[in-house]
Length: 158
Image 1 (cartoon, rainbow, N blue to C red):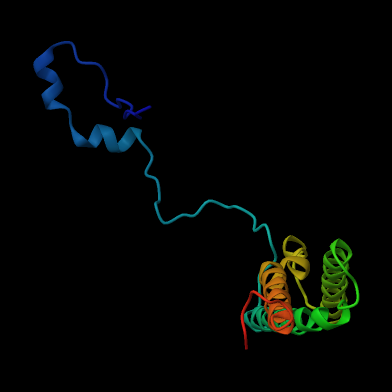
Image 2 (image 1 turned 180 degrees about the vertical axis):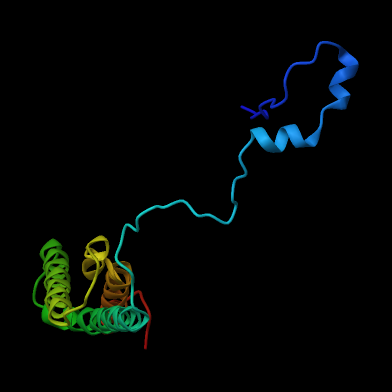
């Protein structure tokens, strides 16, 4: 809905008198609003010190790259650890191994003593989780394919 200005002058008896309305009448009746005044809204989070913020970001980046590195290493190790297991059990064992390694990174992240606000507490778990899962699976599949490609008659010969 459109907002309309409130008429501030007194009603005029005749139509031609409305053109004679003075500016002084308007300024007396309407209070001036200071546009530079900001509304007084309390902050939802405590003020952040730039040094603490950069320290938090540095630790979150370290956690991300730790998870990326562990995903590649664990995906490669999973190929060799679960070589003796056949079929469906190998898949579930590898996924359980992936979850255990990820839980280990959560323990490591809690040991970093990151000073996170209460709204960012879940970042310890969610930081790099997508990259971790996809890199683990990708590395596991690629290394398994490369290791077992010679034993299959129709496949890649290296």
